[in-house]
Image (cartoon, rainbow, N blue to C red; front, side, top):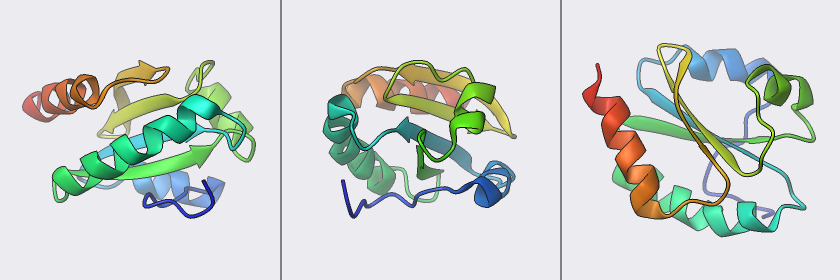
Length: 111
């Protein structure tokens, strides 16, 4: 997972990402996490499909341990769906593309 299609958030960028008007989808991951490697192509596909509706990012829990703890990330990968700066959905562990699409659609419908 050296070069991802998803931008990686650092501490100083996290608040700015949450302040965006669009739905913000953040995958908390770690380089050593095999299920995280499996999720990346799925999230990349969803980022393309939901372009203009949702912004996708990644956050390395080894670099953002305090942020991960703040949001209760205790399983990797963990995908958090932020709407208006608040967590509106969460998907812990490896999920199917359809499972994530269902969550995305649910959050987008609840404007």
